[in-house]
Length: 469
Image (cartoon, rainbow, N blue to C red):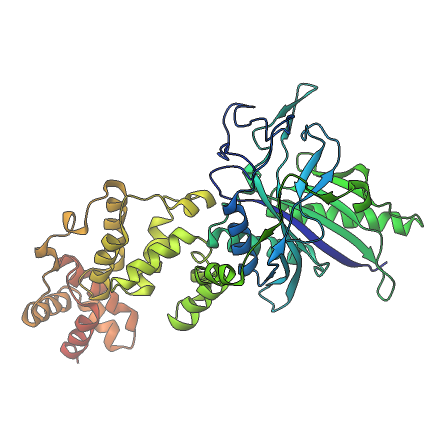
């Protein structure tokens, strides 16, 4: 039986502030368990939260980047629930007045996935399951989050993946989060229901805390299959909270799904309402960098770069900054791009390596090398060899290519080499005269070898063809 998917995603993103949302504890990832928390983090009697101003600014930044409207007046709420990772039995979040509303993310197809709201809240601690025991680490408790809630506009696992990846790229690009899913700084809760075409939407389930883009796709596929089997058997899907286990490649029910009423939201009494002026919103909007889709369009439409190659760099903020700086130094965009993806990426193999882009040379050093290719003073293959050495040592191109190596050949010297190539390869000459043009490559090999790579191949071809007429 044919079913249609209805999907919305709640994305939790840890903000890149240095301190937590309501106290001065560090947000640094890692550390010994239970060393990065204080009485405020755990809601001890007598402790009072103070809202971190930068959290609000980062959230506004994120909202503007995904086309949201900003609520100038907002407040914090208490969301009440009992779980071991939340010792005070409530989470400070936002309910009826979120900071950002009515945005969207546009997919490559042109389809817009609407964003209902973005609100700020505190993260909970982390449960660690080991050897049949469960331990609680409160280091993550109180780390500032934004929760981005999409509308149920997603109609396939592939669209879900693209939406999540675009969110990740945008948030990294504007600098509000590193969005490292493997470290938990970006986590997705995927809401899924299926129905027959023309029928009302089905009962939804929510798969919690998915921590990779590929897992989003796989978890959705499995849950869709599970719901299809239930409906085909004539049973009803029960609204539930689910978990995807990548090790066993299964989805399973954690608990029946709570409704908003179960959380008994009410305004947080210890934190005053806050106001973000229209002037402040516009000030933040003016600081937004060029976003990934706009950057890709500039590379392809304005610079004329092949889209497949441009896609290999546009999503890494530090790579594109390095690329743009090298081009602004006067180096050809195409050759800069080729040097990065062919040689620099050879030593930056993981996604994290590329995002960090920690290399020993500067954009100026690469530009100086690329200018030699642009002016045809060295060949691209030679440049790649030199760049590999520069990346290892951090030294300038002049350490590896001397002035004598860059001196071109005079027309007389080049003509003499071409004549030598003809004299040394009579069979190739005969083949060329008989229309076998590929035979001229033999001549080029002779010329390049004896000129130590200095010869202009195009000019050498003209001379050779003239001499063997």
